[in-house]
Image (tube, rainbow, N blue to C red; front, side, top):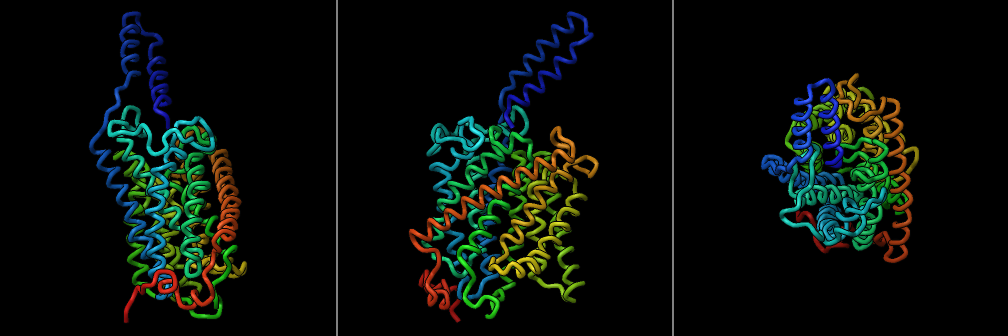
Length: 451
């Protein structure tokens, strides 16, 4: 939110209080109002420390969190390839963000679609430049804001790889990732989070990335799984996760890191961050229990894979609502999203017969859509929310749906074109013998395990 919007509200409130006061009091109050309008930016060391910590927590989500979570879910012959993909994507996106991504997402160009290239290569950013937070007059170093948002870009691209794990060519994935983060992620981040952005201007609420991260990545993952095709032996061979222990460790790291993801998106160490923190606990707990109960009722046994899947579904669902919902409503939101994700990955995916290896769309895409639309409901004070914004519940839900649809269309069309382009240039898929051997050896010449 622009700082001048906050200051304008402060000035209007002060001016309204002048009515009915004696002349001398009006003059004194007017002087106070003028002084208040000239708020001197203040850097709070606590906010800075919190945002630096949150940035590291989001990095922890990717490396080692997401890498281990995904790695445990693939077969042992592909474990190392997933770790490598997450590591190199993270490094590449950091460089792209520094060179042009930050400018495209949060530059000075007054465009609803991108921020321009005025801050390319971090032009004009120094140790003294500041980025305003949600409270007027409170700022953090711009370098901290840049680094925090950079980690969001890194994890979004890394999420996509789970959809076509065990069969994509490493060079093709790197090229696709670079093109995708530039053409899809950076503009969506601008549209949703920059005050000049198209979706932001509609009044859509996305506290920490329901549309920008999860729907965006989920749609790209679905398109990729369909374009690249199924794994050899899909539906016939045993493709069970090789290490649920590793997946549980990774899922736990994701939950811990997600506090930086959600609570850090408040940009300040205030009550807003505390609300996002408690919601990250409660929504996730509700989602885990919902998935486990469903498995007990429908299958007779509760699985660790199910608990880990519910955990992630709850985190995904509450991400856009973390700073707007109440803790009780967050439990409901997490549980509803978990049930929907369960049925999608257990029933719908098999009926549609596509191979999303690690259910990226089924959890991040579906959970993100439910969370983004549900934010319009749980934001309401009637459900324990903070009533952020001026729209009624119905109007807010419609705005949320518009934001979701724009993200789906933008990511879906652009991702399809980019997959096809990369396929023409490099070829997307490894050869059959390489896939059967496993990507650890065929793509990287190493093994994750020596037994």
